[in-house]
Image (cartoon, rainbow, N blue to C red; front, side, top):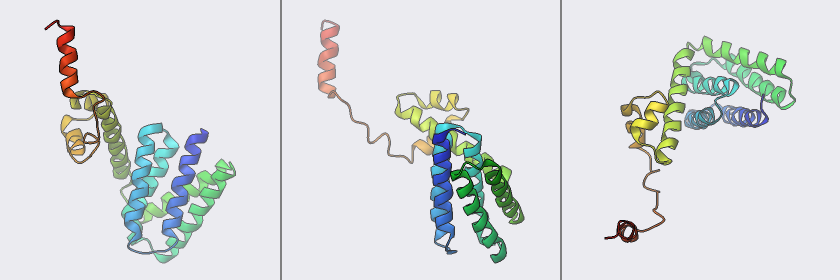
Length: 184
């Protein structure tokens, strides 16, 4: 496992554990934010371990209200074990803890395959938005990431990325430069 990915996974596990330590309804939105951060990391690193953790956190967000008190305690223990095992580079114990967490998720009737699809789709959309900010057209960015133009347009319309763009040279100066080039 790459060190940068390991740090990212540790960060996500730590945040999820800290949020879930106290079982409150308000924590759902915080867990969703952690899931979204994971999606951004998936878009950046495209690592299977990171995808697995992001899907796990997204699934927990979806099913956490239906987890029994007993399973909730096991979940917290396994999250902490996974975090500590990864920190100590004990990948066998880390993987075992992650599998146990997924068993709890499956008990909560989560549609993990659907969540995987959601996470991967969101990662592709976010990566496409980065391509847009680099100057590609919506059609080019969507095509490169295997999306429809419509998928990307829905996301791009909600972001402020394009409003933050500032031209280095004012429009009137660009016009003067163009006229000089073409001898007009």
